[in-house]
Image (tube, rainbow, N blue to C red; front, side, top):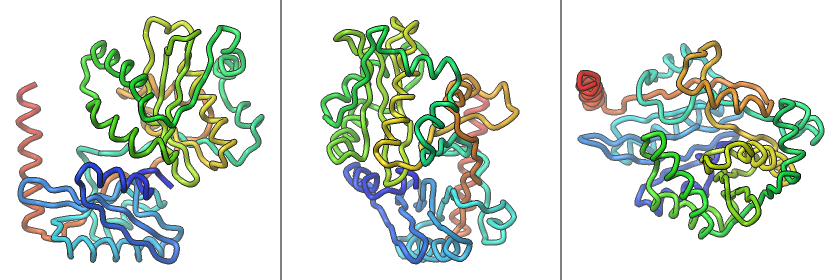
Length: 310
């Protein structure tokens, strides 16, 4: 189960002032965030609903739609990880979202139910070597549940943002996550040091059965040490020891798209083994059709104006 459907993530969202609706039944559950926009409200269910059968999936959708209507939602947005076809979703009244995908529809999953040697054997030779020999270079890997240690990652994220001219989440957002998720071990901060100097870090999220590789950055000064590779391999094996059954590398480029913007870090992630998985992506179901139509027109106009400015 994705961390985005975990109770801990729902609790964190509430600390950000967001309203959560959730319910569970026989073989299904969902957790949705009520997001308010200009003239509309959507019930967004990231990587959900969760279901173990087609009947359970339909029961989850029925509950979600009923609850969303009661809260005045204009539409529901789902991102199912349950294997279901586009035609089956359309038959249930859903429309595919072809823009503004919030969560990756393609990812790389590592099966942690294998024994440790089998997990390591699936890694590339270079990755295995870095994992097994990083200590020989003086690199140590640490894990922390102290919220104050999030500053290690933030230092590197600021450097990456400045170097690549990008805008990451705010420091306040990450600090709120650290305060809400680290002490109860719903998240773990892993960081690598060279001597006493931190040189790479990553924040990873845990649900009951899955660890997810989420935010990572490193000090470019120490690039030759490839500390981020050793750190991630360590976190994978640590997840195995913690009793997780899946490690989610969280987001890769689709197959056969070598020029995709994510192609570079997709190659990096696949060097840790596992299998590529494609989800159905994001789908909307209007609950107030006229208002939803206005919303879609507004979004189309915004995209057109943004494209024209470029």
